[in-house]
Amino acid sequence: MISVGIDISKEKSTVCILKPYGEIISMPFEIKHAEKALSELTTMLLRFNEEVKVVMEATGIYHLPVLSYLQEKGIFVAVINPFEMKQYRNQGLRSVKTDKKDAITIANYGIDYWFRLRKYEVTAEIYQELKILGRQYSHYMCMRIESVQSLTHLLDYTMPGIKGLLKGRQEANGKDKLSDFVEAYWHFDNITKMSEENFVNSYVNWAKEKGYHQSQNKAVKIYSLAKDGIPTLSADMESTKMMLQQAVSVLKQVNTTLTVILAQMKDLAKRLPEYPIVRAMGGVGDVLAPKLIAEIGDIRRFHNGKALIAYAGIDAPPYQSGQFVGTNRKISKRGSSTLRKIGYETMRILKTHRAPEDSAVYWYILKKEAEGKAKRVAKIAGLNKFLRIYYARVKEVYQ
Image 1: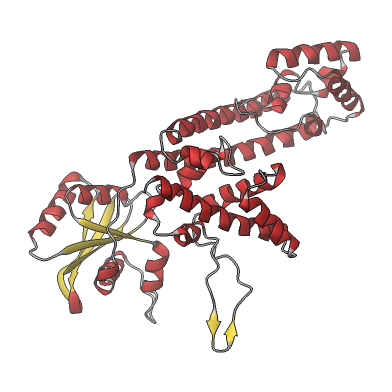
Image 2: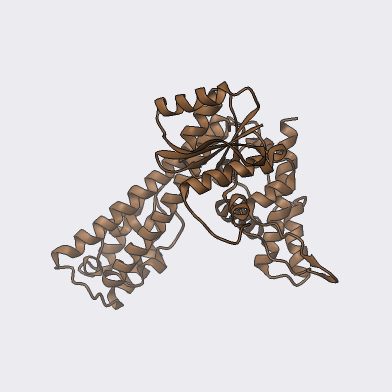
């Protein structure tokens, strides 16, 4: 048995090759993530007459070129969770951190846990694409929140209080009423220089053109707010209009990007056999279904429902010492924070819109609240049950 430990870095890696009982076949050496270097490493490994297993840590995307190349050549590769490797690395009393030392440690891990190593299975292309799109969606959603905050800050100078009258969620087609309104009027002075009747007509025509509800009462409220409002940034300043238009432009571009990414995620998710099953679950709609599938991925990579719950980081491992048995345990949060956010959003929607009478998760949340649990705790408990049901139903599709 030969263990090959690879410490992955950006564009290069450090390799160490060991046999049992500390026998060193090759001292740590560096290789670049290039065709020639990886080909030479592969040739070296294939020449051994014993079973070879390559061990590496998951490092975001940096390990993917090495992983893909070695797997294409038929070499066994195990990808270890960084937290697990950190626990193994910290067993000693003295902390040493170098690339060469890490490569030796990873190779030793392969020897110590030889029979526990699991061959890394290549995720189906559609799941991999969905996950990348899902992470990009999360990235642009953070940008959208920052863009909305930036625009709101500027509106406090030119149209204080306007967001309260035009608040609302982004529509499915990417339209945003507040952004469209600010693009057209951008300052209270542009409203108050018109008579109330003229502004009401202007607002109704604008709403009709943009496809929004044509409410004259809303227009009257906006006009009244503009009359009473005190802008602190003059409309005559050249930079005022420019700053607002640029803020609106950025927000609209981000909204468009989110719409495009979500549409592509929906298209990909609908090709998977589990999509109608996930879509039919309580609290899951057209937006959350592809996001859930993207973050969970291929359900067959989890050996049971508990593994999925642990992946989400909402498991509460038992704690017992002597006569003491811990009963008030907190969730581990050692898992996908993105999946926890999506799952919590699902529970929030499930509770807000009230699921059908046969929704076990909905009634489970109500049960936990009746027991005196905080609403947030009850939703996390509901998410735990939801993921168990998710695993069972989707797993059944592939059996």
